[in-house]
Length: 438
Ligand SMILES: Cc1cc2nc3c(=O)[nH]c(=O)nc-3n(C[C@H](O)[C@H](O)[C@H](O)COP(=O)(O)OP(=O)(O)OC[C@H]3O[C@@H](n4cnc5c(N)ncnc54)[C@H](O)[C@@H]3O)c2cc1C
Image (cartoon, rainbow, N blue to C red; front, side, top):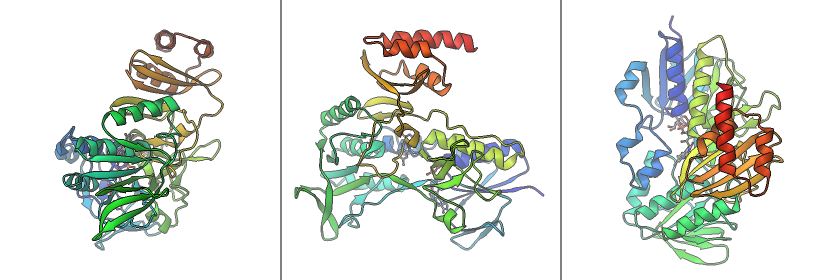
């Protein structure tokens, strides 16, 4: 009998798992259960949709007929229960789906703010397509908005609302934007970019309550007693992996669903991938959560492979990477680049990896090269992380050297020298390294 695979979620982790399963098992029955009627679309693309840079069609990377080729059956319903002993998933409408192998890829969801007035009409977030439509609809009438939180999503909401001619007040608890990943100079480049777009930045400002009128948002009151009139409040203080279903099924969970490097949970027939998976390091046992699109794709592939094949492969988180845009600046973040704590963020934010928070005892070289602002985190023999803002010429060489953990003690020593020609050194080393490792 054909093997039955059930995948919960229709995000990148599930879809890449389905592709891999189909490539290994032509006869398999693959059912993907998704709570969203939109199916598979680009969540990072929602920011560009909100900012009017792409239309809704641009959010769908795969045409429906391409899914037909994979023979995946999509079920638009919420999964409400997993029974690991019976190997059955129950849906909210009562249907039951038996499985031989199950993937949990339910993603992560915004942490709600816990202040008086948080339930008023006009307090919003940006998790999914529904939220993007809601923000667009509300921005048509709103004059002013308050955005609270740190990291990429908060900024994307700020920029999207600006593009829709809403006056935006951006509240930060401390002195700068995304302080646990960006350096002081990088934060200030981003903030300058925001000011140039007319954003009103309020540093050292804590959100105390949302004030309502007739059940709708009318203002935000800060801890210092300032009142900021607004029609909209958007919150992006961090996300939580959606682990309730797994927890109720008795699967061990930490911040996410705990999995080994093969992305298998404590149950040999149940796997987890994407934002939900907290992957244990095989040596230290320490779990890492990543809320990155590309990591979700790779985890989905590894989980799909291990679900369908007897020859298991391991997930190597390598050097997590994000290429995004903040306040108009293209930015690539790779490897371990952490700088400390960020009190605007609870746990983890979207487009973020816990690996970035680490800096270990790396030395830092930060420099401006033409239109690029470059920061390198240097270990003893390797470049362990980097942030490139603006001109991206160095981004690809750095990605390759960091991902491969290229042994480069001479380069590292040269880069640390005062006034070192950073771009030339990296480009020259990278070219030679490519030739020698070909
Ligand atoms: C606004 C925004 C901006 C982002 N920007 C970036 C970025 O710049 N760079 C980057 O790398 N990443 C970014 N991300 C994060 C990236 O989109 C996620 O890491 C990625 O989508 C995770 O994939 P996933 O498959 O784990 O889960 P998701 O894509 O979250 O999909 C999970 C799906 O499971 C469904 N689901 C949940 N529970 C159930 C249930 N019980 N039954 C059925 N279905 C269920 C959900 O409805 C959802 O459709 C961003 C995300 C957002 C929202």
